[in-house]
Amino acid sequence: MFDSIHNADGISLINTGAALGTAFAVIGASIGFKLQWGPIYWGLIGTAAGFLLGFLIDLAYYKIIKKQHRLLRGKNSEVILIVECEKDQCDTVESILWHHLALGIARVKNEL
Image (cartoon, rainbow, N blue to C red; front, side):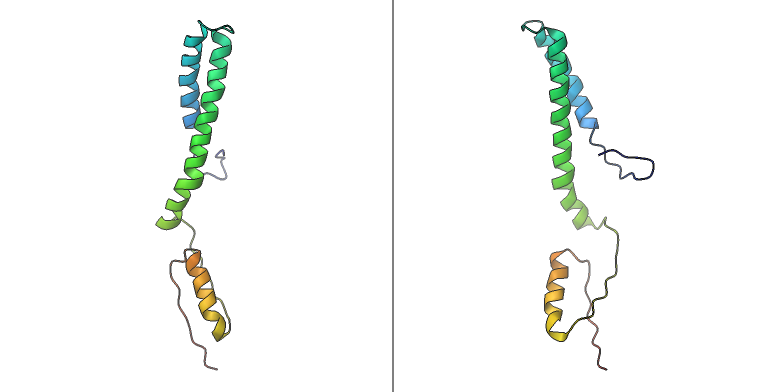
C-alpha cells in the first residue's frame, strides 16, 4: 500500500483517495448547513467516504487491470527455468509454462 525507502514500485493508493476525500468534504460541508448534524460532521463524513471510495478505486485498478497489463508487457523479472523430465511429461510441462505466460520455451533432446 505504501512505498518505503527500501521498496518502491511507484504506485500510490492514497492519491485518488485524498483528492476525492477533499472534494467530498467540500460537498458534505456545503450540504451540511441544511442538514441536522451540521457542516463539520457532514464534512468529516464526506472526507471518509471520498477517501474510502478513492482508495477502493485505486486498489481495484492496480490489482485487477494493471496486473494484466504488467504481465503482458513483460515488466516481470526474467527467470530461466530448466526442467528435466521424461519424454512423456514434456507436453504437460510446456502447456503449464505457456499457461503461466512464459516468454519462450525450448526443448533440448538428451540422447545419452
